[in-house]
Length: 324
Image 1 (spheres, rainbow, N blue to C red):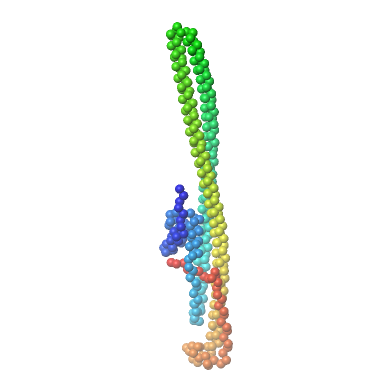
Image 2 (image 1 turned 180 degrees about the vertical axis):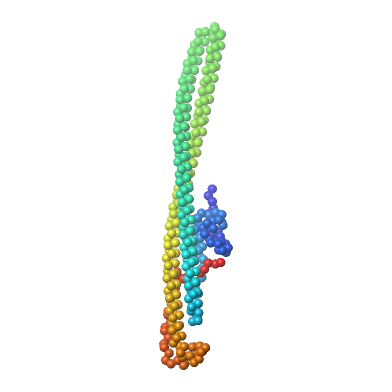
């Protein structure tokens, strides 16, 4: 009897439970949690669950001038963390692809085992068919022998009847003839019983042969189903490899975006430093902020235009760290 398939809700609940426990929701972890489910079905529902998870947008912060260096260090740390997370996801995708490949190999081994069973059953069927044919031939020979013996018995009866007419006066000869007739009747009954037993044996062998044919047909059906599942597993493996390549490409794009952001921050820090250098000689006294005495600065240099902040595409935003 086929096992009932697992649903998307079961996989989603199991994945959420593993995340809540601080564990990684891999295919094998979910199968162990549910106690059932094929790797293909778990992989499909798990991919849908990951795609449906909300992605928190990266918050845009205003960077104070006094915290430029600290912000650069924080960005470096966030960059390293994002890269580590992306690398972890890549390892996860590769692990899932390996699991699917192993499932395909297991299906291939099962198919080969079933092929060997079908071959063994076919050989056994051929052997039984040969035995049935031999027994049928033996039954035909027995039937012919019985017919000959019946003819001989009939001839013997005619001969005994003729002898009885000739030796009606001899009581002893009549008794011997009666005994001979009784023996022939017993022999005829024995041969008849043997023929009936042979016919019954042939019927049993024919029923066994039909049962073997049914088993071979069932095994062929199972083999076709396993080959179809093997092809599906291979297709899912190819899809997983394509997804891994796409994730690697997205990682490279995210790394390039992070490098661009860090360069822009460095330019902003240099501009802020230049403005401080320009404004410090005009300060009235030490400890007075430059913003408090702008009227004392003669002919201040025009401020450089603020760099235009480029919107990072959604596909290049740094993904949020995984939930604890």
